[in-house]
Each structure stands twice: as structure tokens, then as C-alpha cells.
Length: 504
Image (cartoon, rainbow, N blue to C red; front, side, top):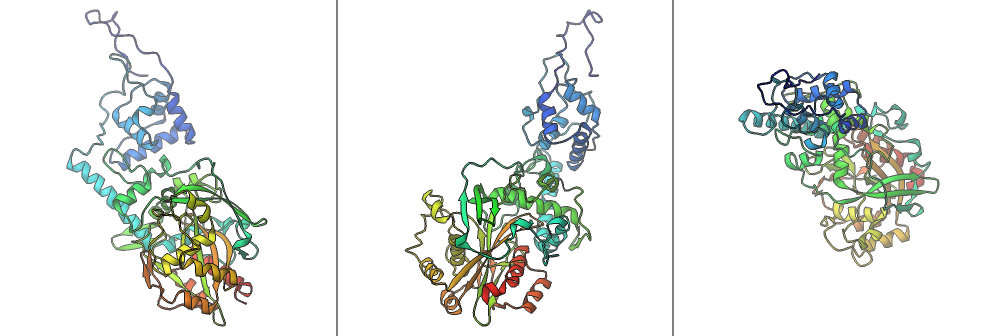
């Protein structure tokens, strides 16, 4: 029971104290715990672990949680209020505790360790620095090991492995891959402007271990805040994107909503960082990957649950296009992405072009014109192969009918010199980021004219000096190089399986 002061009857010489406040259950705290699916013992264990991470050896028990929830303790020690606020990602005054009147039932028994978050001493600041340095170390190692980590993460989803794509890091649901490639003009796109926010957005307690300390008092609110401050890539802006909501290859059609780019960082990169922290052993310059993947300890991945539940988390539509120069000797080109320049997918060979499905301008009139897979692919060709400035949403809507290279591309598409197909949608098992896989087969003369002045590098990485022959031996070699992104491996696999339809 909580400590009570002696009554006036026992100590008549002392000024009487106000009567003890009535015991009122802390329904707010109970609701916070239950909404996170935690028992009282679970919450006690989580708070004890969080205190340990912050350098405090404190043992919190189920009985402690029970006393708070029953209202037996109305104003816990600062240590516990801070831990609860950090764990539930809320302010201290949103925990349901009531600051007691003078003389009423107040705090835990005296003598508990005080927990000071404010960076008032070099020791506290050093603790924050060490935490941030450890975060950077994991993120850096993540960039160097994305392919191997994706392959390892693939084993967590045995029901979603794709025949022919084992050990590539790519997974997919059976109904996310059409029986054969579908031309883009057959696919109806629908934009839904009134979609509820997903359940998982990356700011809850299940991601707290992946978000480093911002100060001695708090962790970074969201993962992208830490990336911005501690490891910002060259390209890092929160732009409007189209969010994939549903697929139907029988119609065929795709349904989208809207989201921000940082919404994807706060889920996809949290999943990757968490997995790397649990499956990479870092010993100085040596990085060792554990031989088997386990879901144990992956709180955020457990919270995401089914990777193909599109109501549970935001899935940004990223369009990756396998470019095939057709003719008698077809060839493909790939893009070596620089991990220091991009926020996700760095360090791997990816499709070229590839880009987030998003409008070219924030001006509303651009939405209608840019809500098109083909328009997105065209812009990425202009940016990544021809070196145009990025259509970053800051300018006016693009006049596709008045501006090159879009006019020539449209003409070639209508004449049949460019044929573009959708191969389906896959996920990267590490990040659960989605790839809308497409393939563009371009006639040799058209390809050579269109990309005569192609660049050899762009802000996201470098292009190889030569194209790769589109043949089985080359594709096998590329897969065995262990540098292909899951999306690139999947696109090459599906394109090769349908090569008669695509290149004859």
C-alpha cells in the first residue's frame, strides 16, 4: 500500500494534514498499456529494459504497474514518469497521473534512484554521443550488407517466397504477380483521396530501440529525424508520394492513396535497421552475419505483422523499370546506387530507371497528368539517363506535349518502338519496401537515338560502362554477384521467363 501520513489523532501537536485523496484508477495508463497489447508484467519488463538502455539499473515489477493503475500511487518518481513517457511516445502529462495536493498520497517510497535526462553533465552528453555513434555504426553496416541481410530476412517469410527467386531477398504474394506481363495501357489506376491513416507509422514504442537518443531526455521522435541529423544522404526530402492500396490483375487495376516520403523511411528503414542490429555482429572493422534469421527481438517487425496487409502500414509505390535494348542481341543496363546519396537501397545494383511514384509538382493540376506509371518512367529516364534536373515538385507542372524528351518518347511509344509492360509487385524482405516492376523494350535505333548522350553517373550513383547481354549466363552471373537488389533480381527473373513475349 502507499504510504500515508499519521492522522491528527495520533500527532495532535502537528497541524492536521488534508485528508488523503480518494483512490481513482488511472484509466489512461491502463488504456495505453492495453492498446499496445501488453500485460502488466510485459510493461514492467519493457520499462526495466528501457531503463537499462539508458544506463539505469532499476527493476520494475508487475506490482509497481498495478499500484500505478489502481491509483494507489498517483505521482510516481520522475524516473518512472520519464520512462513511461518515452516508452509510450507521449508527454508526461498524458499518462493519466494526477499531481497530488500537498500532504496527500504522492510518490513511491523515498530513496529510489533519480533519473535525470537533461544534458547537464559531460557524463550524460557522452551517453547520448555513444548511443548516436552506435546507431550510426549499425546504419553504416546496414548500407554495406543490404543484399545479404535481405536474403537472410527472406527466410522469415517462407509462405511468400517466389519460385525461382529464392535467396534474392524478394518476396511476393501469389496474387501480386500476373500470369504474364501486362501492357501499361491495359491497367486502370484509381486515386483514393479519403483513406484512413495506417495503424503502423513508425513512431510508437515498438520502434524506440531503433531511434537513438536526441538528448539525454528523449529519443528521436521518428527515424527520419535521426537520419536527417546524423546520417543525411544527398537526396532527402519529404515529398508527396502515391501509396499503394490494392492490386487486381484480373481487371487489371491498381488503387493508390497519398503519403509522404518520410512515412516510408519511418517504416521501411526502421525494419532494416532493427534487423541489422539483431543479425549483424560488429567487432571493429569486422562484420559477421548471423547464419539464421529470427523474429525474436524484432518488436517493430512483429508489429507490422503481415507484410501484404496494406491497411496496416504505408506502402510507397516505387516503380523500377528493366530497360531492354531490343533487336537480335538484346541487352540491359543497371544502376549502381550509392549508399551515401540515397536514403534506401544504397550499395546495390538496381533497375534503371527507378523512382518513387509521385507527382512532378506540388501544384494540384499536376496530379492528374502525373498519376501515370508511364509519365513517372519518362521523368526517371530524363533524370537518371539524360542528366536532367530532378523534377522535385518545386516547379510548374510538366508540359509533356511541349517538352523533350517526353514528346519523342510518346511518339515512339505510340509507334510501337517502345513497349512497356508491368511484371507485378514484389517486396524487399529486409525493408518490406515495394517495387512496381516494369520492363521497357526499346527498338535498337530508337534506343541509340534517345540515349546517345546518356550520362555515366547521376546524383544517385553510377551506370556501368557497358550494357549486359540479356542472356541466361549473364543473368546467372549477375545473381551470383550478390549485388543485385531484390527488385532487380525479380525483374530480370520475370522478364527472362517471359522473354518470348517481350523480345521474341
